[in-house]
Length: 400
Ligand SMILES: Cc1cc2nc3c(=O)[nH]c(=O)nc-3n(C[C@H](O)[C@H](O)[C@H](O)COP(=O)(O)OP(=O)(O)OC[C@H]3O[C@@H](n4cnc5c(N)ncnc54)[C@H](O)[C@@H]3O)c2cc1C
Image 1 (cartoon, helix red, strand yellow):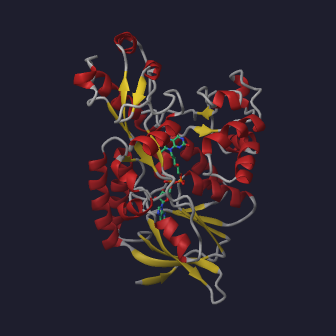
Image 2: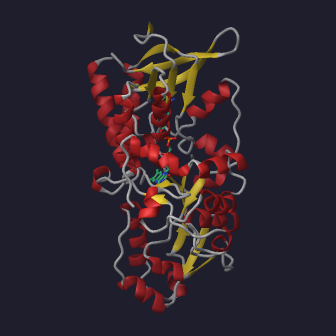
Image 3: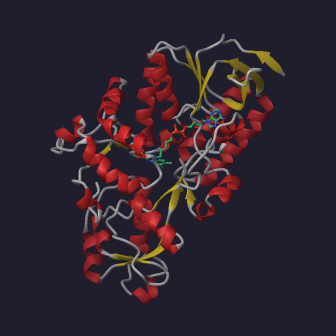
């Protein structure tokens, strides 16, 4: 069934209500545009299950308060240009560094609050190390310290105050073009004004699936599967007109075919994302002539610390060679581990290091604590012949 939408022509349609989409909506509304955000679920996306730590620097207020006020955009750039390689072009990277501190102030103006480098070779020689992770203040989703949910909520509230409309349970399936080949709206499936049973159960199931996404993926997938069943039966089709469509609909790590095509190695890692990371946003962009690049650049993480003592060991590949400096940022280390060692490594510690780690007190986000504790308990033997297999290190990946 096709119904005409209740919304009149809007200035901007944003597809996807994670942090990128909500920020785009706020920026457009601040400049006087009428904006609607369409989200296949109830917003939040991967942003709401993340730690929400913002990588920012170049002299932010939080850095000054913590005694690192001498970080500068140039210092940040010198470090990052080596860290990111060819993943970001030079002009974008420079702009990112120059606008980093003002961007943090923009986030604060929209209700976000924050607390408040790399020390490894060769980075410590290229730029002055400065801490740049800005953690949002908040309780974290489900009390688990994942403050991405607090960050998202603050931005969502600010967007609402600016008059941004939000339509949940609305899945964009096509970008519409006029006869001159210009974008002029979207086609989407939605539960808006749909049967009450479908709206209520889809909402409950989507939110529950998001809650379990990072902790218990099989349950989350099962809930998403039922939600999908309900969505297909309850949704109707809509069209909405606008000359501007912003695509902020996540990545493709949950799309097995796309992952196999662009980064087959990532199929061997645990996925980090939500059911919305099905590649639909990327495909929508391509359908109207958009081009893609760096599709193989999936960020995989095998974060070793805390406890910091684990960094005192040596990580070797399957053939026994050392992979890289163990105290590199976890994402960078994992990149090298994937390239040189098929994403696998073995952590070797001596008995003195092992005792120090076992005796140390350390706090850590739950999603890193569980695997770390598993290794520590499971690898209590210091006999490398018996336990090295058990302490094999694998990566998990987030495509963004
Ligand atoms: C466990 C975990 C921890 C992380 N920690 C950090 C961290 O500390 N710092 C950091 O910088 N990054 C972190 N990340 C990565 C970060 O969360 C993501 O890069 C970021 O959230 C992506 O934001 P986004 O708005 O682009 O996508 P999302 O937040 O995923 O939002 C995309 C939205 O689009 C919607 N959508 C999808 N398809 C459609 C469609 N066809 N129509 C309508 N809507 C659609 C989805 O429902 C979703 O709400 C973490 C990720 C995970 C999983």
